[in-house]
Image 1: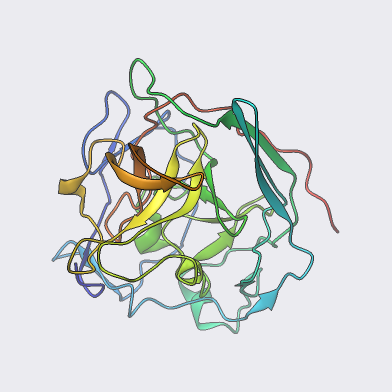
Image 2 (image 1 turned 90 degrees about the vertical axis):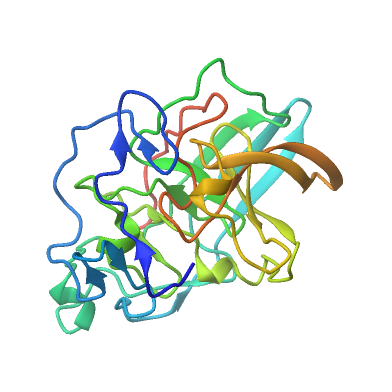
Length: 275
């Protein structure tokens, strides 16, 4: 799929039942926030956008104190993070009026350290029926940053409309930095080799989130995946090659998860730290 003509995901939201290529959302009551103006990288007539032409928030701020850990204890996997990126940077937030990104997105929020600890099953299993995605965190990446679903505050395609930094991240009201799409700053962990499969995060139901490439080096599309944006295939899980269900990261909306295949934990957070 060309990065210059990614299908726009606007309107592809359901609250009744999962659908392939949609976000199965727990709510339709969106707040109407997000980017203030659509950027010229969006071709409304064609129903596509260009991630190459999309403006990025300026800045590259390191977080040397960033901390996260993923450990297995008995039947559980403990996912703990301060939500700051390890080995990556964040842009200058709040977005400065002098930043070209400001004319499209005036994000006034600052990046703040958080305290998240989720206890998920080490060997996840399918729920009786797929579960909807709530507002806020749906998973955590290998660099410690949270994943949110593909929707912005107005229920639109966040990957197309909202302006992020060079790592495809930005903060929300409480300062929680997050990705809606695959972050290029995870590319150092994810192999670009044809036929490769790399774990890049965990969803809140315990299932792995992978970057998988076919024999041509291409990522899967929605047509290759189920309604939750996942499939069953051979992957490396806790150091072993196993055939199991997992989610696939794609360049196509909904990017990460369409719904939960398993039963998610409550992704509550402790109070933000810092000024």
